Image 1 (cartoon, rainbow, N blue to C red):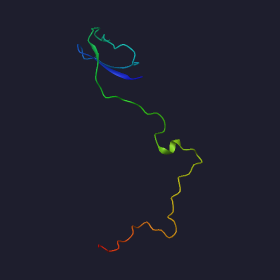
Image 2: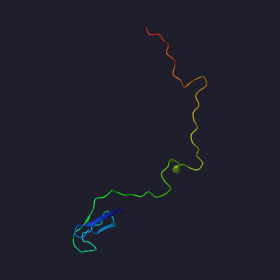
Image 3: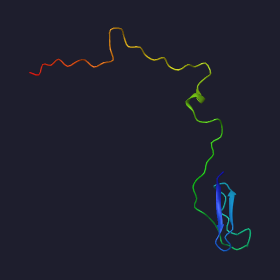
Image 4: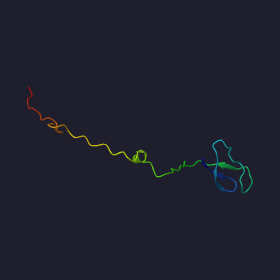
Length: 87
């Protein structure tokens, strides 16, 4: 459930309220009782629970990293040299 920030324009009281999205907005200030309590625009906050989001979190315990591929015998990783023929 999101936490909404409310502020009274009459007395300045501020309050954070845990509400469902479908709940009606609060209008009456809990301190002065006037109908001047309104929802404030604020940065959205969220909370990640658990140990974290890492690639290793979803791998099974027995899996190992992929082996590096070896170049085929007789081949090289270098580009072929230029022949020098420009005709």
